[in-house]
Image: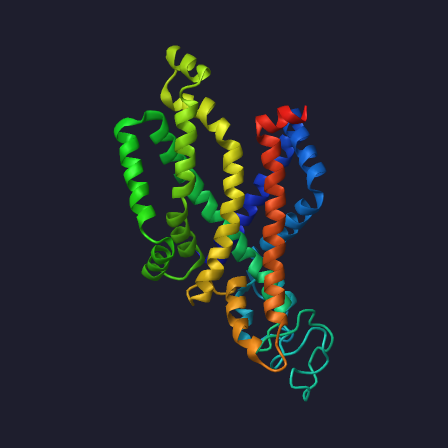
Length: 340
């Protein structure tokens, strides 16, 4: 099956899941109240995150074909997203400043004067187009990797903390081995062994980022398993899997939210570091920043490439941190008691 077909199916599933979640939240008084409280605490951050997610979803939908106006033969047979089609005929010869009418050298009039909001790069590509394309990669790097690393950390951490004994020794040994290896070197090795695709980078980042939260979940489970309600459940003959699912994991959810926010931000920044080393993901904001570093030595300075990518990266991470902080306050029972 073609990659673009899989991407379209994934987008359809995500949209259907979002619609179902919205219906479920509206029918549940508890979750509806939590959603209203979240909107009250950080409406601007929610709108910003929703904007990034919407751009990423639109960029993930693609199909083959077009009207042929201003397009070459190869482009007509490639799957392109609506964003690609919107900027299909926006290419210039070379650099141009934001909203300029001539090229960077000032000698050649632009084909589309005054339309490049963030200017163009060395190859004449529109910077706004690249910024919008980078949103999907950033959300994939941060979201998919977190969804891989956090369940892995919970599985090992909760199992080690609840069962103890040899299980705890085995998990602690594995964590110690991974912690003894410099994470950046291990990350570079994993990326080079696999390939530089987005999925490979996500897997490599997940392998190197789950240990920290595993230690936290293990320590919290060691404390929770000794509480009275867990002891009572064990005395009533309830199995360990159900105890962990009903009594341990719900009390770790606020830590999961905090970890997701911190991990999301750290993973997106880690991709920037990989791009700085030349092994990042093509089309990402990190790759844009890496390509723009040599342009700072020009006279005059070509600043718009770096500024656009940096502003997009800063806006996403700041909004995610605000939303995550609000969700943590809503889910943490101790915070709710203080607010009552």
